[in-house]
Image 1 (cartoon, helix red, strand yellow):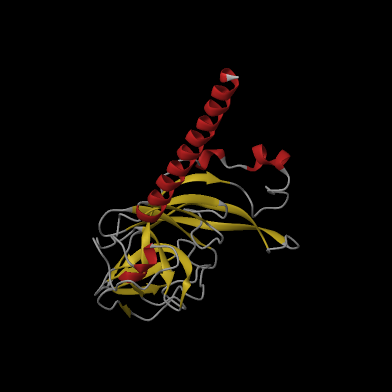
Image 2 (cartoon, one colour):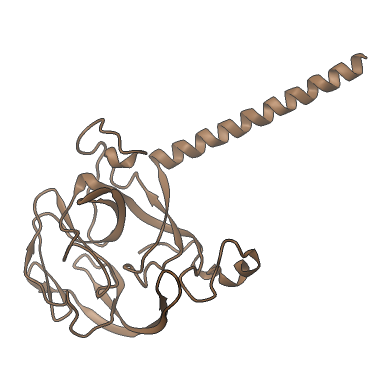
Amino acid sequence: MSLGTNSKADAGSGWAETAKIVVQALAIAMVVRVFFYQPFNIPSGSMKSTLLIGDYLFVSKLSYGYSRFSFPFSPDLFQGRVLGSEPKRGDVAVFRLPQDESIDYIKRVIGLPGDEIQMKEGVLYINGTAVPKVYKDEFKNVECDRYFRHCRNVVYKRYEETLPEGLKYTVLDLEPAGEFDNTDVFKVPAGHYFMMGDNRDNSSDSRATVGYVPFENFIGRAEIIFFSAAVDEPDAMRWLSPWTWPFDIRWTRFFNLVR
């Protein structure tokens, strides 16, 4: 009888130890998510070809410090930022949309406080100086509506831009004279930033509806892609069709740094 009793006690102790480990792991994961790195996925093509629909990435909250938007449900506990570090020009950053603070956006930081930003004939100007823009190649993409009823092959021209600080990245141009290829001069207010998508003709950004983004609205800087799947193409990955997964996962994008 004593052997049976010890066996049950050992089993109970084993389950308790397992539960303790699970709780500790969940607590650690929650701390990491809230204070250090938060996962996000890309639902739109405004940052092509830097980021693609179906990319999953980690965003560093430490990069810019903390505001109320850094925490779940955005509790109104304080104003401004704690341990704040200002975004750098060229950062790819996640922020809350000023017009609807429940929506997360991801764009590239182009204008810093006090800068003058303008587009002329598809060329970006910062403080009156043209940003060098060099043609690289074509970027071919299949684009569909949300129900995959209408799909088309789209060919973009891909260019490399070089910011004044030396950072290089690529942008896409679909229309030679797109709606936002020529703009007025935007004077960035103090404490705000001018954000643009790399897919210049298909990005809702500071040139239009987004406007200037307050520093408080920043959540973090995009750091690394940890998973990517072609969810936006015909016959592409469907979560309910696991037999397609190995063929539709973009293996080459895993662990790519976001720059």
